[in-house]
Image (cartoon, rainbow, N blue to C red; front, side, top):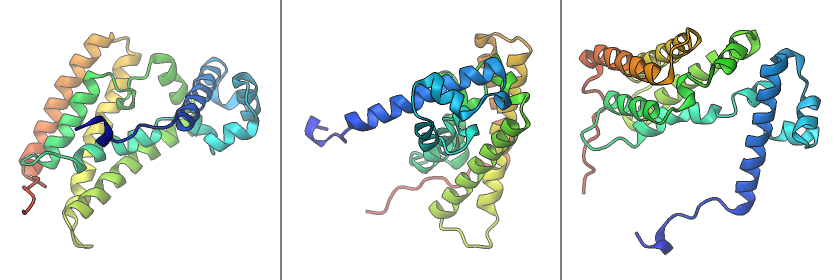
Length: 220
């Protein structure tokens, strides 16, 4: 691929917007951890981030969005990998690969974003509910992709069942990561434990989903 043919990256304007978004979220999360989610207002976040209150709400329509600023990445990450799976790769194989690669790079959307963050979420019913909703949205996104990709009929339960099983494993591993983190397990130990747990869990799905949705070569 020549330089001219490579997709253009985000422009300066978009990079600045993303930087502003990340800075606001970081400031807000710090305040929430320090004082408690329910005790910090949007106005206080805006003041601490040195931006207008409207700027905060433009980037984050709901207060919970300040905490889960990577929500879209969490929802779409696995689905995107499944959608782009390799020829000969099943849906389960792609999901397994997604988890392994995300674990290797320390992806915080897998559940280990630090002890202070974990305690903050657990101490707030609002945040805990929003987190559960993100898992539900992740499952729905995968189900929709499988229905589209496999051209499934409206009454075909297989895509929804497969999505529920795969995301069910990811969800269990997410909360297992948090449990171990709060129990004091060190980062390198945590990754090893999660890798073993993931292998165990995905292997259990292999009997039912091992050949489901294998990507076939495109017809020429």
